[in-house]
Length: 546
Image (cartoon, rainbow, N blue to C red):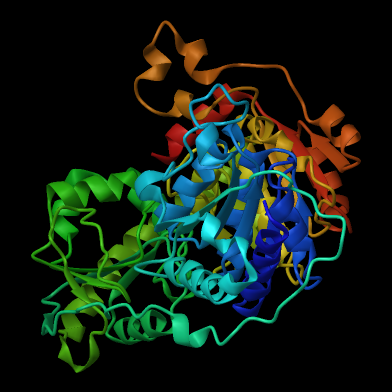
């Protein structure tokens, strides 16, 4: 590339900084040298060096999720870019703003047996809000105004039509390095170049709640307007149930509602199903509840959102509303009676749960998580890995002031550790706790291979030496090939902790856990607390919850 092209790349990073970007995750390479040098040209960025692109993608996801500000990932050409796909898919599903800057070979080398050359154009398909090709016309200084407009476009499309991924692909030709100084230029007025999107169209609809009103809050980012609407609904005696990763858990009607809904019967639902359902957010962890609503839908379904991009989760064709406002017509007395019926059932289930835990003498995964929920600081951030970990957290129900994050967009075990690391790096004001099963942890240990690990992260590793969730669900446990589902192993995190200079604690009995948990929680650096449990014991206690 020409020196003018490198100046334009530097200018792009000046623009991104002016537009609010602060965190950049950089993967190694040579073809991406102009991008790395451009990131370094502005000393205001927090730069994170990550060897593994898949881990880098998830770290950027965690950082963007916790800050709600777009985060940049820089990678080289070839399969390096493809390794970002899992995190890109998760960001798309959860509406998290990411900016992928990928280096590429010149177009004339494509399909010419050139090393590290693959088809990178629109490689993320529908999972990217926007694809932008960094074209050769940007090789001169006269293109700086065009760079400003592209920077503005990148930030705009990371937010609209909903928050998501923008992919910018750079076809760099050699030379890639310049030893003489590169000129830095201040951005022009970027506000003028923002593309104006048409505001979402919402229904102006009179909301009639009928005699029974249930509110379900799924995964999503916090919105003041939605919180206000939920507060009004709580004042109308609505039954409010919030997914474990919902940002509105402080408004829910019962802390342990998942205990009841995990074991609810169809008969119970038919007697107590709501006439009106109001939802907000997106994903729900509770599959049982989701299936019951699909099979026996409410009479009315409204969805509160600040965008008209809403998926029909329950196949009920919900009416999308931005606000309920004065249109809400509620029978408060009937709602209060409906809510009381549900609350009594949840209270009873909560008492049973407490007794069940008190009877446990073995150190099981559920017992471990229940103890931790009582001990974690109320302002701590909790990250729950897939698959059983997030379910344990949901039924044990941390304090309602604890924000809980989980990669429930694609619900994969890949990247759970890296996502928590990225969030902790971007948010030094809070303590972060990752609760993870063994397979999710070991699958993602490359997330620990970074220059500086966050000191404000602690990892609780539930090691049952297999994929224990496949013992819990119907089907795999009856198969002759059960070991291929659960993938049993004998590994521990002891040597991993030593390799990465991480504080390490372990327990295989309740007494060991009680003795060591205080020391673990008081650590001032990254620490791992690995508990060892019997998968059959985990299976027994989980079935007793049903």
